[in-house]
Image (tube, rainbow, N blue to C red; front, side, top):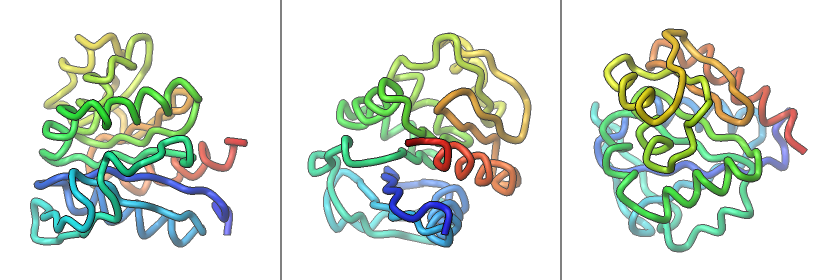
Length: 175
């Protein structure tokens, strides 16, 4: 298993995109990664946009971000809510400062925009937020997925098959 020993944090709130949340967890666990789910409250049941749900392992306040190799942020409407929390912005800023993986897909770029870490970066997203990312200083491209240093960005659910191999690639290169 290529990601044995890697520990990832995914953050979530109501109206996350079901595929963008669950598929990466399944795929990365298949590679041996450990994934913790954080939300506003530990043990909270969170509903996705299309009928799936999950239960958080911990609250944002319980997270010790220094213990993680990467941060995964699913899309849907969840990122618009998540970016309102200083803890969440701090997670993204810490990961960026320490050159650790940040995976964003669809609307998840909103979190990095609010964390003020997109200046000079090249990312993709759903076209609906491209101007938000550009105004945050990013170069936006209409591609399925791409890597810019420690940030892996994906456009939408149909692009997950290109996004996840890039997540794995970045994680395997991290010390």
